[in-house]
Image 1 (spheres, rainbow, N blue to C red):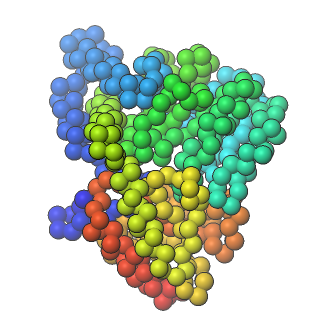
Image 2: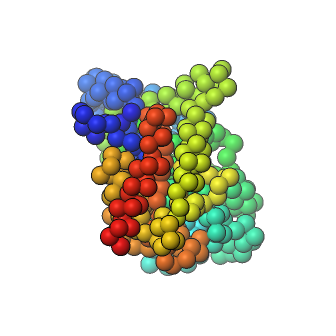
Image 3: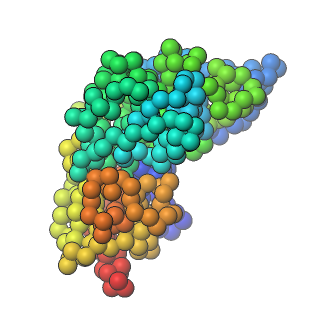
Length: 399
């Protein structure tokens, strides 16, 4: 249960934006901050202690993701990982074509715009009405001069999961480096990096109940030497990410991954894991939301993030309402939700994702997202439909 103050629990349904750090994570960060506060590049006692703990955390991270320790680069979060993966790779080759999906995170879109100014051609891979990549376009998208591809694995705004293995194999067959933003997918279960046809993978810790300010980039060995660093100075992270490593935050992320691995192992014996429990809660909530007139669910309802509900919100008379206005009313009622990507939530703009899915223009600011986590309890979920109806009524009454 999440509390915003000492008296009232918050119904926190915004896991795609961030998650409350787990108790074990907080404890580990505090411990490491006390015992390994040294600079891991120093060769005295405190520095050696920090360096040893940094590498143990790297080993834990790699083990949880079925990767080699040399595959793991620590960054400040997924946004930096995305920039290092795409800019670092692109700047090591002659400009060509970059292909991104039409439903990318704003960080990927920003990188694409930067590369376009540097002489790269940018193609946008179209999606269907459910936000799914149009696989029939694979040959045209990956034809020369395509030299780099990035497709988000799990879309945070509408929840659709892309056929990432199919895309990855198609890129590999053509010798095209392939990057994916796996932030939302990793939060729902550990990955088997060794078996994935992916060359570069970005993720953040704070989406999986780890700390903010730390993330990772997984890189295949054959690509390490071809990535150009974005910042220089020290030789940290195999020379690709200069700056003193935040040992406590790295340890916190490793602990969050370790907790996911432990819970998966514990629940394997009971035939139900934490993710499936959240999915059951999600499915029950979505069923109860069906009673509210003026709601239209978005995204792929089959291939979707298991903790995610996305919808367009309107009146009973089928008039679109502002998703941001509904979010504000829900906040007054003690329910935290989102109207789209948290990185764009402060902007009153049409949703690029909904636009790519060819949603009617009148509804492009009507998106609403609930994303759940294991901190929630069934009693809280029972209150959500009534709270949403109250929020909708409050917004509709002033339209």
